[in-house]
Image 1: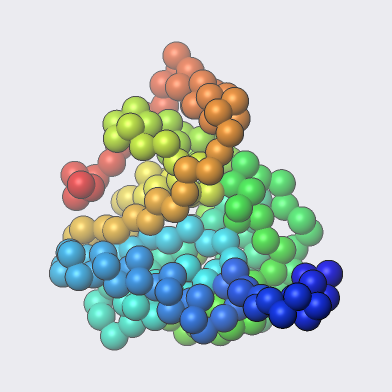
Image 2: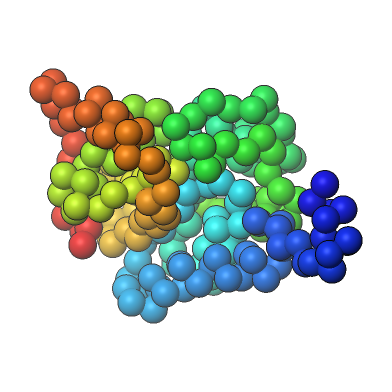
Amino acid sequence: MVHRIALLDGQVIVPSANDHAVIAGAGTVAWEMLQEVHDLAAILVPVGGRGLTAGAALAASGQDVKVIGVEPAAADDTRRSLRAGYRVPIPPPSTIADGLGHTEPAVLPFEINRRLLADVVTVSEQAIADAMAYLWRHYRSAAEPSGAVAFAGLLQAADRLPDGPVGVVLSGGNVDWLTYRRLLDDAMEPTERSIHVAPVLR
């Protein structure tokens, strides 16, 4: 339908990830981090359409920086695909990080990620909600679930990351208020979870 409309109206379709220019544009996020912090050891990036991850991996290529993707455990098509060495489709996932709920990596980003991505970390639904709550409690940053996934990866895998500063991509605050409140209320129950963040965060 999209292609039909574009053809009839003379429009241009811009893919969300499977496009060289889109990947290059997304990679400027990591490039700006590298310009500001010259001794970054790693960059954590949320894995959705894979264009952001591929762009970050390209921006950091040739440098001593590990780019690590983070995706919901319920939507781990990229992790499975990288382990298998080819694109692995999964059933439509159910995750609060709905912006990352893809069923198969796109062709172009997958080829880049297969060569350059250091690893993929998966996080639970609870870890995503905990990350949203932590960001609000300590930084007054309202991140949507998909935008908090990379930070959830930091909280979960901090002891397994390389020594040195770590960049984390927080990518979006597009969440309705009722959903946001419910997730934060669940994550901030009186039975507080113990969450430790390395002092390199700033």
